[in-house]
Image (tube, rainbow, N blue to C red; front, top):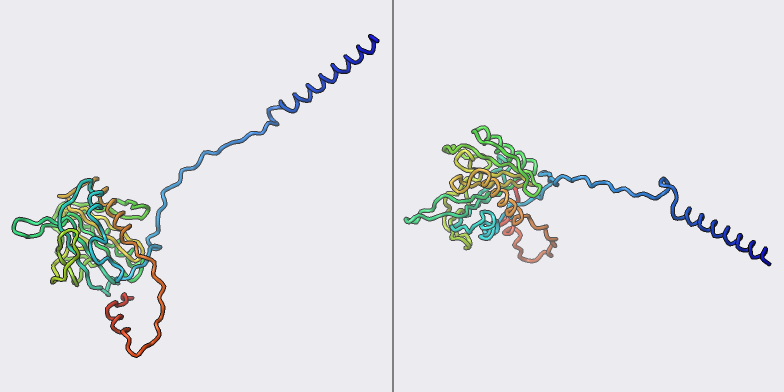
Amino acid sequence: MRLLVARRTAVLSGAAVLLGALAACSTGGSPSSAATTTSKAAKPTAAATYDPMAGPVETPAQLPKSCSKILEDTDLTAAFGSPQVGDTSYGSYAPLPNIGRTGRVTCGFIIGIDPFGHPGPAGVTVSIITYNTAANAVRRAATEVDNTVAKGATAQPVLVNGHPATILAGPATAPSPAASPAASGTATSATATPAGQPPSSSPAQPAPSATASASGGNTELVMADGNRTFVITIPVSKVSGSAAATTLVNIMALVYQHTLPSPAAPTTTAAPSASTSTSATSAASPKPSTT
């Protein structure tokens, strides 16, 4: 009887040892067999840069019809960091087929009026110019930069929400009387109006040059996108140095946001009738020049 109990005890003890060994193998194991995970550090990504040649194409009819479509009072307050008071001037200019320009509008903002009722220089001038091709627009913007640098200005490349642009700043000397080819042309309408009011139909008045030279006491931003070029100038008397560059970039971002052309709406062909106004419509909305 005692012998039987001893054997059972030995068997139970051996089984316990075996189970313990199995448990150790299943939970422990060698370090090399343990599953390991590694995490790779994320590589920093560069800011997206857009190709000006791939930008939208805009017809002259899509250019803004008033200064409020380019910048609002709240935009100027945000850009300068304080409320800006003054009148606006709007100018619409005829095409220049010899350089491929199909349209141009220029708006002057923050225009002060002296006690005699004479307007002063604009605190900000924004010009939007359309060309027959994107390649032509990019080339015209590059020419403007090269010509201004040749007059002694310094060029600083910047990005406006990923869009390449150039800041031009130069010595405060008298501007050349010859207008830039990208800016010249006869204004079809250019009127000074109080802020917040639409432009009137009064006779055309001289408007600021679309590419006022930075050597004339302005800091200028030039940017091409698609078949459009943008030229924004601020007098150094308004703001200068790095503050002018920052303000110009902020203004350009707002102008670009407000003036993106809307997708073309699908058109339907009306059935011919006894009297149509097709010719009148075509005359009112001429197609852009391709020369």
